[in-house]
Image 1 (cartoon, helix red, strand yellow):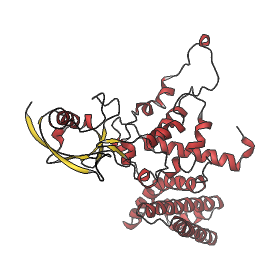
Image 2 (cartoon, helix red, strand yellow; image 1 turned 45 degrees about the vertical axis):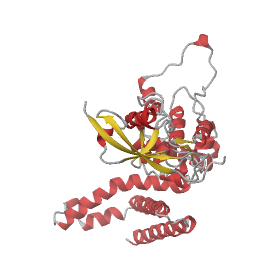
Image 3 (cartoon, chains in turn yellow, green; image 1 turned 180 degrees about the vertical axis):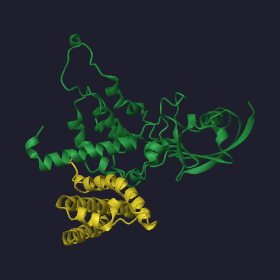
Image 4 (cartoon, chains in turn purple, red; image 1 turned 60 degrees about the vertical axis):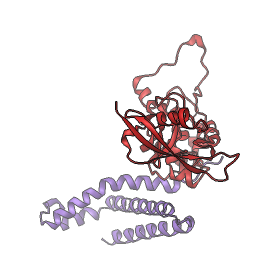
Length: 113
Length: 247
């Protein structure tokens, strides 16, 4: 029996799930802090902007955005199948395309910082 | 040690006379501490000797008496009547063809189990004189929980993917294959991988997790499948992106 090529889509999905499990709670805490007006010195806009402009940070940020979006897309694809939408190729094409478009947009924005 | 009157609704099917399965009601005087299997045995002994079901050990070891109790996959010998109120509905395990009454046809599972080679394939032959294979407690711990599987097939009845895709290898076969892959004495992962890494192997699993919830032996097949997915993914990257690292 031939080995499946599923790892191509599953690898970024698994990586994305792991990354978002760490990144999402941190983002929620930071957002709440900002909303409450308790922004630490280190996280002021100017400091963060300078941090994000670093080439290596931009690459990592683009990677995080890619695996997060890909993970969500893959989850949605499986959910569609479980909910009875059996047009898997169509669903997969649409959700992965959205994830790739989002990643491309993030790269554009990051490069314009 | 009180008594209670239990209403059982049991699925009956005789392939020689019935066109369709149907339910039959039995009112059974049961003891408070009985399990569903005791009630079925009581029915067979006193009310209806034609009732067919599988059982053997009555102590959650043999894995024969898996059936649906009020829609959930359960071992009849481990399911206490006192935890149920009203009519108790007993049906054969879901996702398997019915042979007769509560007896299912399990050929599909047995064939899949055989395909994944659930036995030790030694790394290299070793003579008896050379002594035993030694293993540290840490090495044992890596696979021990997966040895507890009793092949009761409750996980197959619980798995929605197996219901949708009958070719899927399924939780027990995959976690038993993983049990041998994880064994430090074993060298058969490459052979098993042909089945495990195929589309019908781990990749039909969408990580619903029902297998681990219903397992009467507290094996975690969902975790085994996830671990195989990770290993298979690393294999794939190695085979396709780093072909010079051939094993």
